[in-house]
Image 1: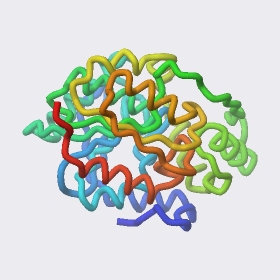
Image 2: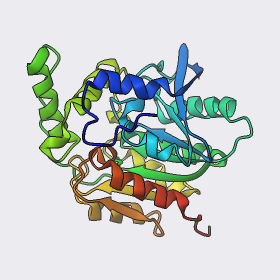
Image 3: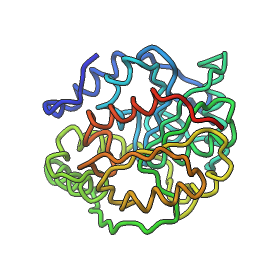
Length: 288
């Protein structure tokens, strides 16, 4: 399995993505009028990685190799993104039902798994865990909005009519405005992932997240909740503010901050993120 966590991962991005994808086990389960497409790597206890808004499985491209050494990773393109069809209803319950039905086909014994959700994927995970607690061992939120906390100021460039280097430059600007902190992090691989995933998005997640949709699920959760945040998360800034909002409902929360990382922390600081996530996953569950 190619390791894309290093500094040379941006060379020939399409080939890099294809090389990693070629080592995946691919599955399809029913989703609306089509399929929910899953990719799986590794072996060991199961973990589901849910991507963010306008993303796909490749949001986790710099984490898969490390995590798959100790976990069986199940990474769907969420309904309405990537290769997956939209869910039959565009609400939390419909999306959660499609994922639950898929997991029951893929893991027939219904072994509870760890659900790690990035941004929009964290809101999906919270409602999924609230509705199907028997399928979830723990929930780890990564830079997840919907807490009704002040948002950072974000100004994005339009890219629809742009081509070539002008389009790539606009994507770099948008990545630094929204997803990443350091200019060098907006490399060719990040631009390629952002462009290709965004072009295939068919779901507007805003009404499913903002301003306070995560707050609708947190009080209902009976599973363990932990969180990881980038130090310089732009859309949901000031990790201390986010931590305080989460602790209102889950006071025993283990809240970790990735230094030097923006919103897409697992891409920008993959080694630190991978160590942090594996440490959380390796800890025993707290007493209920």
